Length: 101
Image (cartoon, rainbow, N blue to C red; front, side):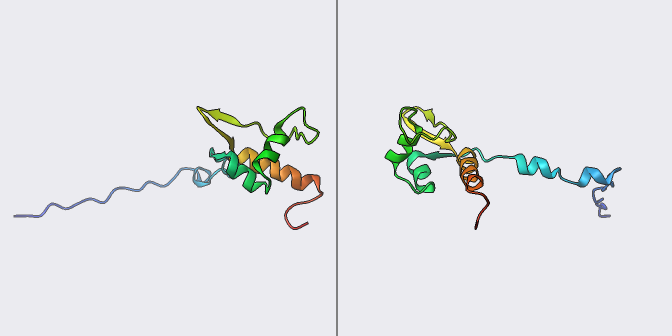
C-alpha cells in the first residue's frame, strides 16, 4: 500500500509589510477593565477607606473632583482600575514630574 503524501499548509506572504505591524497607539490606548474594591483602591492610594469617601464627598473641604466616581454592582462598590491609574498620574504631573521626581 502506498502512503499518502501530506501537504504542508501553504503560507502566503503579505502583500504589504504594513499589514504585519501592530498599531502601537491601539496597544497603548487599551485600558484594563478591572474593578478594584474600595479597600484595594484606598490601599493603592495609601489612605484609609474613610479618607477615600471624604475625598469623594462634594461637601467636604477635602473633596477631590479629579478622583473618579465609584461604580456600584449590586451591594458592592468599586473603582475602575485604569481610572485610578490616571488619577495617580495626574497627581504626579501636578507635583511637577513623573516617577522619581
